Amino acid sequence: APLRAIPNAEADRPSIWTLLVSAAPLPLDRRFREAAAGESVPVNVRLYYSLHLMKTGRVSDAIHQADLGLREDPLNMLLRINRATYLAGAGRDDDAVQAYREVLDLNPSMVLAQFNLAGWHASIGEWDVARRLCEAAYTVAPLPRVTGLLAGLLHRGGETSRAAELLL
Image (cartoon, rainbow, N blue to C red; front, side, top):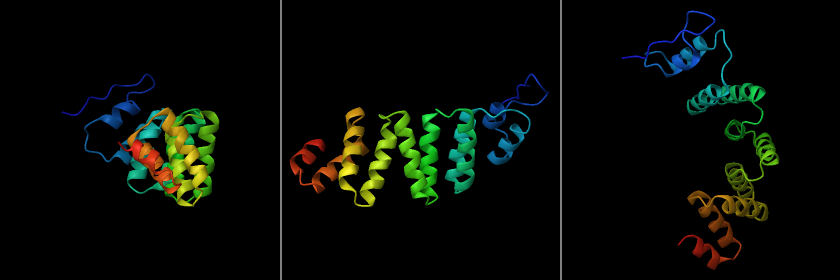
């Protein structure tokens, strides 16, 4: 059975959270518009909605939702990283790189920003920059994808023994 709407304090209509998580057979976009029609949208709702928009190929809408969310919470690192990823998905590489650098200015040990920026630098042949960023990410969190990229960068740079050790 669908969740019952909990009226908000201002009107006899469901809250944005209730509408977004209800099992009602409404498309998510329509539920979002209805829920946002008269109340402030929490930043995390914008975050999840922007992910939905990106997943459905509406990149410019995803960027817009991320921008709106960052006006409310400019230090939301996950939203900042997602926005940078959306910019990259839109082919706006310069903007994406700038957005990742802004994340790292705010939090130099943000692994996802380091990793994504390292991958971008590797894709354009800036191997030393890519390796430095990947080394920093690995130091914070030696996740499998970080380890794999670092091993590849080390191998490419001639450090085959260290690359092999990482992959053991």
